[in-house]
Amino acid sequence: MKKKIVTILTALLLLMVPVIPAKAVEELPSGTSNIDANFFAIDGGMISTQSNGKPKLLVFFMIGCRNCENTLSSISKSDWLKNGDVEVCAIECQNAMPGAIQTFRDTHCSEAGGMIQFGKCDFDEADAYLQKTGAPAGSFNTTPLVAMIDVNNNLCYVHQGNLPADDIEDYIPTLQASSGSNSGSGSGSGSGDSQKPGSSTDSKKDKKDKKSTDSKPGCDHVAEYFTINDATSSDDALSAYQCIKCGAVLRYEAVPNSAYATFLADTANAILNAGQGEVTINTDIWTCFNRAVFDAIKSRPDVAVTVNYSYKGEPYVLHIPAGTNVDSLMDENGFGGFMYIQHVINTSK
Image 1 (cartoon, one colour):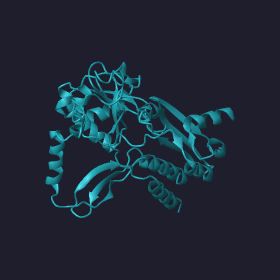
Image 2 (tube, helix red, strand yellow):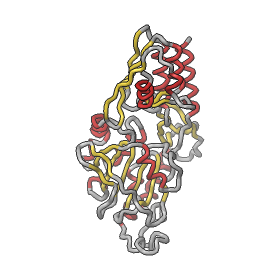
Image 3 (cartoon, helix red, strand yellow):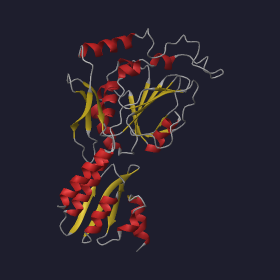
Image 4 (cartoon, helix red, strand yellow):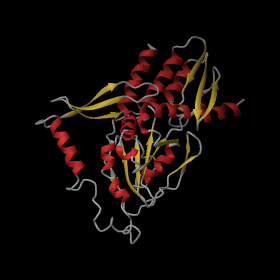
């Protein structure tokens, strides 16, 4: 019965998390200053956000995000990357372990030939780029987040969601253009000599339009979201936005937060169905429990909970003794971070 309740809770959590479609590439006002930051490189040293006479692309991604895999895999196969037209830095934004990032790189970006630098940061640092568009803090909710920086270190475009290399290529001429006009009053993007993406003379746009019309001629698509892969405790569910008339898949998207919802439900289920003794939870991604997990701990005062987790790349162990009063471990919204839980347990001894 308890297992059934948690299964229902999982379904409700997933229903509460909407599928957030990829947002259009957003052009920022000419001369928007780039953020000066440095990220840890997984091969040692630091990665700077600053461009040095060459356009720079920052791709903030998450391990397990299918859109991130598609975007970075596409970039790794592109001619413009291999020709050195743009410097590309892929920044994992959940402070994953370097080994996990290396596995992602070797699995999805092997064709890059080392032309993509990989590093890591936290969500707040990535979210700062989205705030440059005027969005409030915490608006970063879809990965990857792509930031395009021109040769003069101006932040020109940002985008949330899958962005194929062919689409990125449309923006490279603008990023490479001299900023003689940008360094002036800052109004507009120049004399108009540099073609903007999507102009009528953009042959790539014509090519993509032709590609889309050739794929399923004559269908005025009516699309719905369908689940392709269910979420696991580490990977978000994958959905396809698919035409119900002709079957064409218009795009694939990860379901944001579905992996976290699954982790919470699996954890609560493990506690509720444990034999007497101890439950061990292992995670390299998550650092917080919700009310459902605390309710499961409360209902099993005979079970201790040990959590092996990572924070900023370092391993930690949290031990919640059997019979702990969990009401003191969570905030008014029912959430409790592992670091906070440890602090409360240590100070109550």
